[in-house]
Image 1 (spheres, one colour):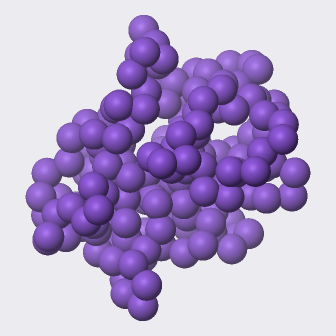
Image 2 (cartoon, rainbow, N blue to C red):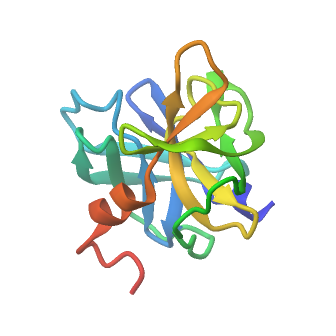
Length: 173
């Protein structure tokens, strides 16, 4: 699918992350696991094996977000980021546990927010972190942060935090 083509494996040293394409030169991912970065170099690969290099140009440990700028254009178009609706159907595409891409479907939960993050009934695993969470229109409503311990409740980086993080980056020129 088009969204699977816009989900990337981002590799830093030997660590593997899921990243989500925003436009032809930017990938958004979570920063947990990247806190001790000594270099900004990353390798980016999609499901078809398309591989390029990139650089982490911005990160915020408190918001748990990182932005990668690719050194070449990515082959796909933009992903729009929109505010989620309560109880909305959602899906995510990730690269958990070193497997091929896995698609999980679910819906936004109530209570809607927890610790300024959005909650969803959505199956996620270690390695899903950083994968976009899409609504049924294919728009990004957040990024997988993780899951609540001993539950099937996914914790999603909020729309508000992502918009704040990207402010001034001219992602959608």
